[in-house]
Length: 169
Ligand SMILES: [Zn+2]
Image 1 (tube, helix red, strand yellow):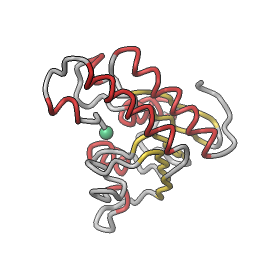
Image 2 (cartoon, rainbow, N blue to C red):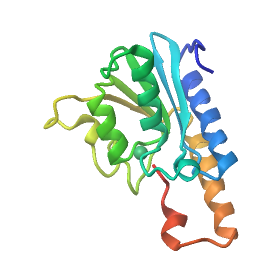
Image 3 (cartoon, helix red, strand yellow):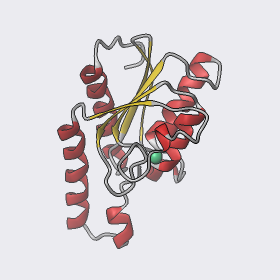
């Protein structure tokens, strides 16, 4: 996936969705993110919170770290981050701090989204950087993989109620 050329938002989101499906392999909430710079995929990650036991191992944070390493600088200029689910406050904060010019997300998160649904950390005039936001590409597919994951989890013995509703992003 790294080095792939992407032509438009839908093509990029399809790759993020592929990443999301990889999270299912270790029972993590299926959220995927890719970062595209000048049309080339430079980072592709998925949620690894369960896999690593790291509460900050959301797809966006991992992708930001990979992209910064690739570029050799913390400032992610000329980059667009694509993520299947609207970023949480932590990831939105990381995106502001990495100065990503543009963020595209698929499904909205009405419970915890920080791209406009609950908070708007990504484009708050009080912060020193604002990301352009596009929402909606492949939102149905991005939402369906999450709904199916949680439906399956509810059938299995759930560890706690909160874990069953926490989207992990
Ligand atoms: Zn997050």
